[in-house]
Amino acid sequence: MGMTLVEKVLAQAANLPQVKPGQFITAKVDKIIGHDISLAAFRELERMGATRVFDPDRIAITWDHFVPSPTVGAANQNRELAGYINRYKIKNFFEVGRGGICHALFPEKGLIWPGDVVVGSDSHTCTYGALGAVAMGMGSTDVAAAMALGEVWLKVPETIRVHFAGERGPWTTGKDLILYTLGQIGTKGALYKALEFAGEAVYGLNMDERFTICNMAVEGGSKTAVIAPDDTTREYLVGRVPPGAQLRFYSSDLDAVYVADYIFDCSKIEPQVACPPSPANVHPAAGLTGVKIDQAVLGSCTNGRLSDLRVAARILEGRKIKPGVRMIVVPGTQEIYLTAMREGLLETFVRAGALVSPPTCGPCFGGHMGLLGDSEVAISSTNRNFTGRMGAVNSQVYLASPATVAASAITGYICDPREVMSA
Image: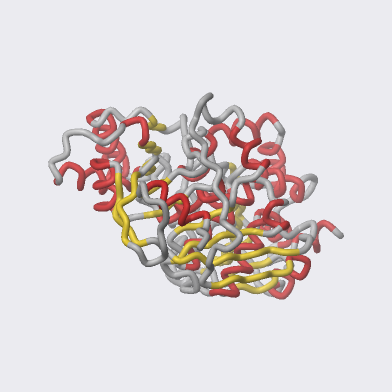
């Protein structure tokens, strides 16, 4: 019996010839990632009595949630984290002004490789599956144990395959594909399962869009998500990974067993929007034109990458944001910010009337840099829209692609980007 991509990676990590869904294994960890909220994992490491980590070079930490520090408490938290970083001699530490949002930053820096087993104290660690890694978010205690021992104990998940067939429309993006998927399977449709995305439409996506798809797979309850590496993956890694890096390009066997197999026709998928209060409450953007907005947010670990900014700037070029609408643009990393500045994208945003923020997770989780007030409505390229997620409990968040966010900022209501670009 053949194995899926996820099963192959986990079998290698467990030093076993084969693994099966439901099997409990101890797997070696290749990389561990975290951010300022990962302070809890380091405190657990201290409670365990650990005097060192298994490999300081395999751990990467950045400040991203409370950046820049919005409160004295946050500043003290970041200072405490920096103390642990120094104590455990962790080299891949990215301070304010040198890093960015973790799930955009670590692939950019070439720290995650195909075939890796990655764990992180953030639910969206599954983002790295776009590179063919098996990446999983875990709790602070599990991450602390992984930092100390270099291994994790887990159950091999079943795999669901999602096959995107057909040709995408010009304004149907990776974000629209994952929103459509969530609308079909729901928030529990992949509970403790792996989602494997495949099909000609997926392999026609750039790496930024693939990261977006894998990032939001967790909103369907998945343990991890993967896309088999191809030439696009190889091109992305050129100049990022060091010479001689051990890159393991796995793919699923033809006779691999899937617990479910979905086939979606991309030619029928329009720009999508997830309505509150769930990422799975998905409808076509064209049917929501009666929804007025107060704020538009472009950014986050889901859609703060360079191609996201380029798409939004293309729509905003020569246009103005609707009076009464606030637009906040958050480049994912310092490098993305710098490149966007060189390309004139930031000037486009500013001339349109947007506020450009430094790299931060702030607006996405309702921490700072753009919270919503009572009864306000936002359209956002972020990944969650639960009640109170971005501010007031009675505010509302709609999730959409960068193109839909930009178009909506111009019109002042939720808008299919085709409406603006055909005008």
